[in-house]
Length: 157
Image (cartoon, rainbow, N blue to C red):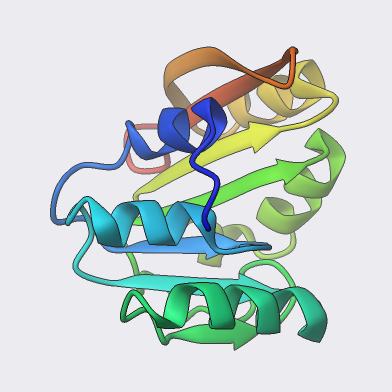
């Protein structure tokens, strides 16, 4: 059974109906399942750097018709501009910077990012503000921990 925590629901709240989404580091696939069940996104790509978590995501999400699961590091499994929204959640701020900074041209090809750093949110926020526009921020709680959500537009910067 998928766990739709306040963090998952908070992230999903920034995805507009009809937007295609890539969930980087999808882990269990709970966000894509939420989006599929709610009828929000016509297309969701699940990615992970490791085969084990990707297999779990594939098994969980497959029963909801989500079959586009890709193995790879960061944005590498995606073609430039392939989706409207890229979600990178549940990783440290430094890891998120590494993912976005690995190929700035490719990063800029996606219109919107929803980022949820587990650590070093201030470092990530500073890095982002030098390159893109932060268009929304929120903090939700999960297991008593604050979870910042940062929404970024690459086209508005």
